[in-house]
Image (cartoon, rainbow, N blue to C red; front, side, top):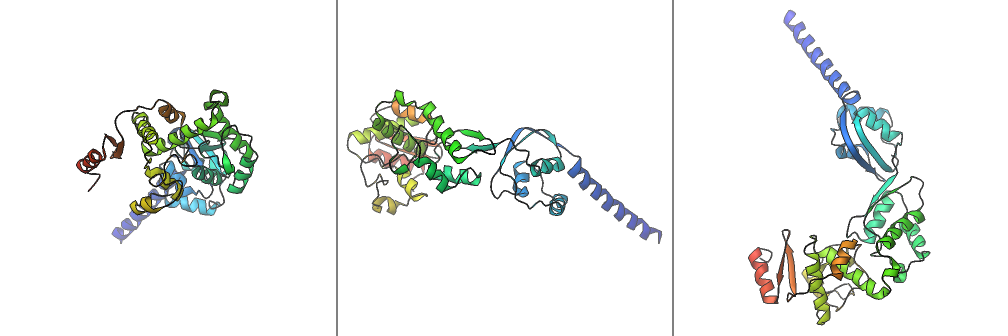
Length: 316
């Protein structure tokens, strides 16, 4: 009988200890964060927030959130964590909507379609609202058919919670104009062509060292009447990687394997550094290049190009 009671007490003690541990870990144990920003978009839930904050989403968390309306729609915005926070304090901060504004990050090379999707996720405007604002913009550079591809400058923007779609667009395009003052580029068509080229170079190679070299190759191809043959241009129109057959058969102005010259618009939003790489392109005897496993290879002839592709393992 005594042994049985001992076992029961031990089990009860372990259960109590476990409960107290879970309780302590949720309400009192704190984790330190140094200027960590959590971007809450439309549809974000606490499971995702915990993952971003590198926290374990345990049973106590689930029960607490279930009992306290954790499934309600969270307020879109950027929540900054600087200091020590318990799980309870993190949940309280987010549920009380203590945001630090809305953070919109446009990565280098993002397309306008990707920018619009991110804006919509952050509730900064839907496609219809964005197009309406763009149609009313007085903008000094070419933007035929309301196409502003190339002008959404890659940067991180922080907006107040009550910002309008118009203010967001004005801020982003304003940043572009700061980087590229209209008075500095009197020949707007030449500027636009260089921007198109910069967007292609940005999509083709990530390394800053390679960008002037690749720009030089593309410009040389244009000079001698050769097609650009960039996979990135058709990928832009399709929204995915083009197959070899599509590169050969797709008749579209964005298929640079079929059509000579630059595409009708930029194919993304490049940073000023890539634009400068085009202006300072390195022209050599090379006419071909490819990137494989982070390294870019250059060749003067197509035969040499194929040989290097085989030797690198890129061409099986």
